[in-house]
Length: 144
Image (cartoon, rainbow, N blue to C red):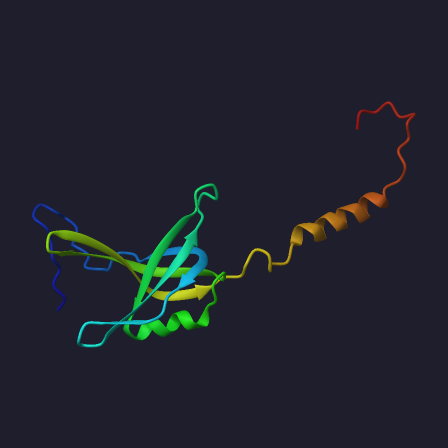
């Protein structure tokens, strides 16, 4: 039997589903070497994405990969366009607050320069069609 949990005064059961993950697309700007932090061998690796939602004001955003995910970054080169899936983590230490963007999946995206341009193909077809039209008769008074 599955129990449903209701908040006081609510008619709908509370959902314990995870919040949606965040994602961001940009160019891999810099990769850092893997670091071992602490005495227990905690591994982390940082990287920076050049994010240009507004090309006039590009942003450099730092992410980190932890433990076995550190090797994911080896598949990519600086300058590659990638999509980063991440979670936001926050912590407090000695009265100071810290925010980390923990990446958990990376995907390589096709660069715009490498994509085939289909606009030129359709323009060429239109040009060929326009060349096959009969000559205009200037004696016609019709507006079309």
